[in-house]
Image (tube, rainbow, N blue to C red; front, side, top):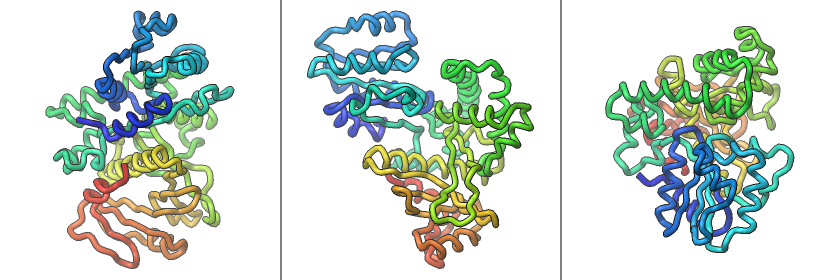
Length: 372
């Protein structure tokens, strides 16, 4: 199954290095190797492998190598300056891909020696839009229960998906988090993660979680930032421009893996909607070079809309997600106030239509049409 970004990555490789980042087990290595199949003399090097580390350190690949893939290179001390040197002195015919399961943005501290030398691509789990026309995009229940991560999504036995998730969570906590930052109190970050699983879709209070776990609010914020940097969760913050008395501080937290959500069908569906919209927003930002963002609206009077897509800091579209029911007074309120397109997504909808200037859409068809 060919991933949607492959064609653009091949084009970008003709100009610069390409970084492929994204959640653990979202298919980054598979995609890199699939791209390498288009070349005659590819070399794949994984920093986690002792033999590959020697080759990396000594730069002992052949000059005839036409594509060089570095996996998990960010774990090497001084990797940015190393990569700058490799890129600046490479043969003209050599292309370079760098993959990793942590955000590139987290490595920009202390200067950016790689500025102007790479294009970034974020590989997220499958979505209905990406799988459109494959015959696999039609089962929204499967997406919400198993998530779009390739292994559980494609698993024929539900037990295999459950076993994958158990190992996945253990790998995130025991390996990725500890590799990313030395945390002495691992139990606390596990508790924060567990509490977030049951608070999907609600503004998250750092103070409330801190009280429940027995740590400081600043530590909670730090832990959530780590979870976000490792593509475990993503934050959706309030849109504040031109929204009087909006709540400025409390983000909403969602998971890349919908199977991690602990809640009713409504919470799972809202998380799934958030993921699909985020994936589209990220794809547009990376492809167009324009700042697309996923936000939400909420005032102190508790008028709230689940999602606001912003383009270059301005409202572009308002979206409310409902598993059932078609009543959305806050969406109507904000639609009238700001005069921007608005969509009500309903999981089970018999007929799509427009009312009060609001598109009432089947989630099934809306997700398949999202930009990727």
